[in-house]
Length: 115
Image (cartoon, rainbow, N blue to C red; front, side, top):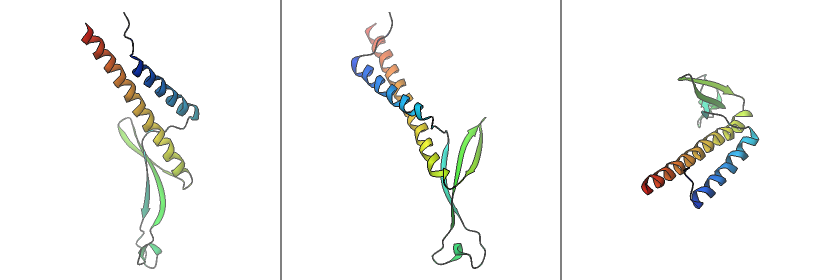
């Protein structure tokens, strides 16, 4: 006999599916992280050496793992903030999948306790 979800879990799973579909329709998902960096060049007379200093940047750096190695890429000023949203979508998807897994575990445990 197949395992079935209780009503609350069924509704939560449907809501998760709607959120996943919404993100998937955008196609805007990117793994890893994006950080905003500012640098100091050390040249005398440069604004980055003023008091108060005005560092160079912002520079946007995307970092991710590829075959268990960390890979980084510099992004343009206009793309950094945009891709930051893509990273947030990836994290949201991972959270949604974790919630689905928790529903599955709860259903399995509930079914096992009935046996």
